Image 1 (cartoon, rainbow, N blue to C red):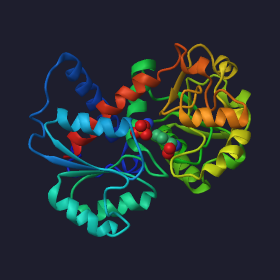
Image 2: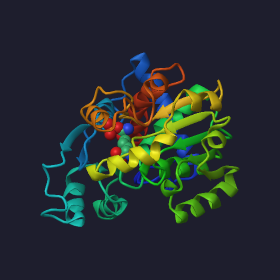
Image 3: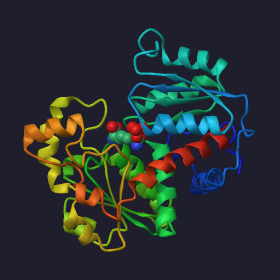
Length: 328
Ligand code: CP
Ligand code: NVA
């Protein structure tokens, strides 16, 4: 398998074999890290640029730690500190950064921005989250599912919440590619875009995957191996949508009843950050405004033995390391 020089923009660009290769490479790198075996010689002396037009904890730290573990230096460009898009076009930025760095990570808004960056950079570009997709998160999730359930093919994954944004879209694609059974369990308004559903259904026909969209919680979560959710309002969306989201998505909260309906084999996943209590500024504000104590997932489920969210978060670093190691 040779992925040298490839971009990592969305899973749709990769074959199932390539995706699983990256996940296996991540598992190998994880084992090395745990044993204290250094990997600095792999890309020693290289430099990578990390562009974040939206905030981040996991993705930024994963890229930084992974780059350092691979012997590389990093330059972080924060949401306010670059000229990108404001004073300089994406194509110009790409050509400048491409002349100084061996690879570029981009987190931001439209998918077309990261695609444009990749078109002009001349070096690998990695998508650290756009409105449409979050592909590095998918590798971490697949690794976590493999570690916990011992398999990927045939796994039944139910996603609850806003299924038409980056996480819902990416999970539907990941499931289609890897022969998993994907269910979006949410209000019709939050179903994924028809064109992406069609595209995933075509992939699913080749891999044995299935795609189901349902508004029925009982039916949508019954027997699920993985129950997955994400925040109800994503970065970059207006504050004004909170009220509507809380009203429309509360029936799709992951709680004890949902997990019991899934069954004792089920694990709970969340890309994080999560609103499972009032210990965040936004959580507290919403709590006061709408008289609630938790949102997309109850604290009980979040803190339960079925919850694998912190293993999932750790795996961000190992999988991002695999992406950089393989494409540079
Ligand atoms: N899951 C994830 O992407 O987390 P951050 O926003 O903290 O990077
Ligand atoms: N849907 C979320 C994912 C965060 C990792 C967002 O875009 O804010």
